[in-house]
Image 1 (cartoon, one colour):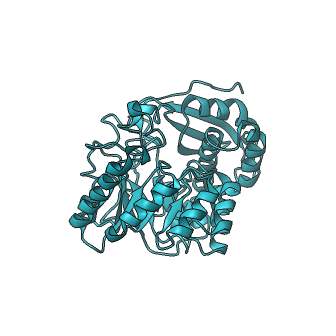
Image 2 (cartoon, rainbow, N blue to C red):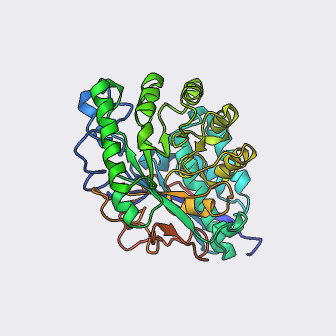
Image 3 (cartoon, helix red, strand yellow):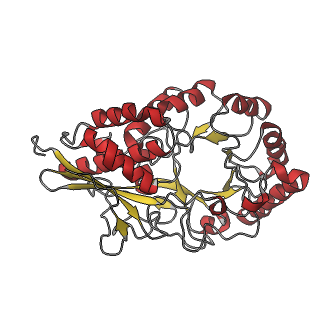
Length: 398
């Protein structure tokens, strides 16, 4: 790599088509066609019980970030946040990136984070920072002609086992996945009848997949402590591998109560938490059995490595939420990350589409429920410029 190289441009685009990019909820045929509701924090309101897209989870849209070096090399990333994230990147974060040595990842991250704390320190600004960070890692890998996983320590295993998130764990089992995670249909507002229906839903799937296949429940922050405890006890014979995101990630005291009252259950969380500061509290209480940060949300790979290091000191496994290749390159380097999530975006979960749709020309797909990484530089994904519809709506003046 030429040590005199500098970053010359940062570009952010909104993807104009559904089904491609980092926002897996934004699908043309909807996000999972099921006969019941999906429990969410909005379940209290009947109008928004049917699906997550009904209350607007997909309105922000996917984005593409490109970072170009002075020799014309380009690093690319997928992200979320739509036009607001693009505005932050083009109008604010650009000043911390252009002119930088591509190897100065920590400086780039720290300056973006310190300058954005008045936005709130979570959510949208962290999505934007994550997208820039991932594009920087991709750029550096391409410049060095090395895959990202080699740059952060190399593989500790030959391949990555996957569990599948979707509505058909039985289909996932036949395809070779090690487990299946289903959305919880009913929330506390549905009272005892909803709780019984939840148990029947998971018991029916347990009967299909047999006693040894891992089943997980995705509660998506929709429960309260008494209901989560009652549900966990009611599901004991179903033998769930974990219950995920029962509460809001900020409810640390609530998570402590869950672990005290139902110590035999694995309680997981972290998908909607951000940065090492949020995860530090989760780790210190020992109330979360498995951490699930999303590398496209929590601050990118740079911050995920810090979160992972803290978790390793407590022997807490880290199983990232979704994010395809970005998670794979991380997981394969970490001894305490034993497997990874594949998030199925197909409406009926009868097949296993690429995580980012047609965004990339060469994205790796699961084979027999596993991923085997190659030595393609960066994250190993080439942007599909031919078929991808994207718009740069906030170009910065050079």
